Amino acid sequence: MNKESIEACLAGKRNRSGQACLIPTEIYYYEITDSTNARAWEETRQSTGNGALFVADRQNNGRGRRGRSWVSPSGKNIYFSLVLRPKLKVEQVSMVTLVMALSVARAIERYTGAKPGIKWPNDILLQGKKICGILTELKLTGNQMDFLVVGVGINVKAQDFPRELAEKAGDLESLCGRSIFRSELLAEVLHCFEQDYACFLEAGDMSGLREAYQERLVNKDRQVQVLDPQGTYEGIARGIAATGQLLVERLDGTLEQVYAGEVSVRGLQGYI
Ligand code: BTN
Image (tube, rainbow, N blue to C red; front, side, top):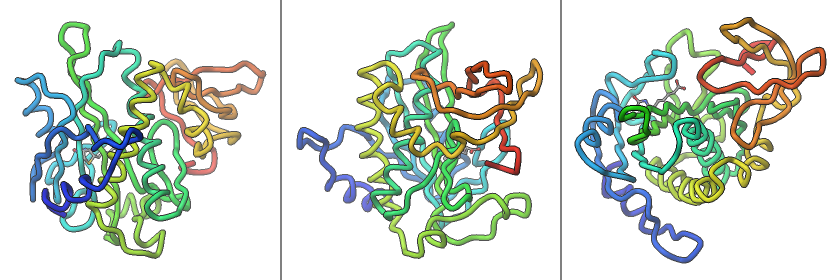
């Protein structure tokens, strides 16, 4: 994978009106960097950029959710960050991560034929193994949204995961039993995202994408434990609201809306 191969794969993609894709507007490629989210943040802080893509072959300070690190060896995986500047209210922003999760799942399905699931809000799973994580970071000016960095890590090739992840993580090539060209898959993800993001922006919420998202939702109709700072409770996940919250039916039949970021949701038997 390099900048030229990514550009060549993107050149073959057309949107619904037959035009070349608008995303990305430009590409920054690194053989090695600390974190593509950090690079995107630094480059965009001083600009009005929208749609730039930051890709690395290796990260030596890859960032995961909840302050964890994201192991990012060279030659194996896809690490990218996309800068977006939508006119959204802060409370709408968490939905962009759900949109990206759906686009990654769709792209993997188009490319490999395998149908990944989504663990709400944004882990992508294949055969129960996490193959992709998404970290969205938001730059505020006062209480207005300035820009977003949507960072995506996709495990593509076989690798030794750290011991604590070995049970939970997997890679696409081993799980699909075929080889994957990272530039091609990345171009497919961006192509799917362009369509899904346009649909999201038009509605201002997930209403046009909700069905497709729920079809892939691995938590659906399963028992979950909601780790709410106000108190942990159990229930059955029923789907998502048009505004992206997980809908959890409590044992007494009441329906809770669970907001991403504030709480975490666990399966009762392990990860899902
Ligand atoms: C998670 O914890 O599930 C989210 C992981 C997100 C990792 C990606 S890799 C590309 C981008 N750059 C980073 O430093 N993190 C994200």
